Image 1 (cartoon, rainbow, N blue to C red):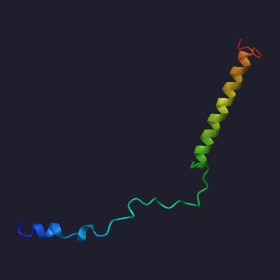
Image 2 (image 1 turned 90 degrees about the vertical axis):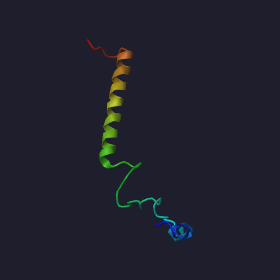
Image 3 (image 1 turned 60 degrees about the horizontal axis):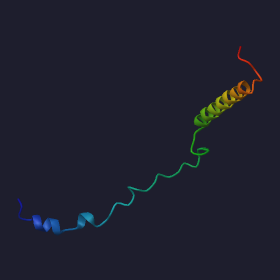
Image 4 (image 1 turned 180 degrees about the vertical axis):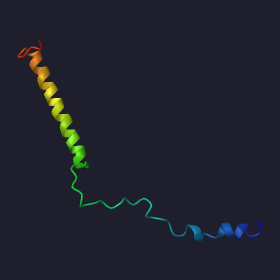
Length: 71
């Protein structure tokens, strides 16, 4: 069973050709329109969050400067 073990270990046919395509990145899909790597739905959510932030900050600024009163 172990008679040809040394011959098998000296044979380097298993390691002659390295596999190069394992670490290659996948091709970029040029057909998809992306801005900063985001889809249209993600950009929409970001724009809604930005709008909400501007509204809250504007309302807070008006309350601090006493241009409007809550009660």
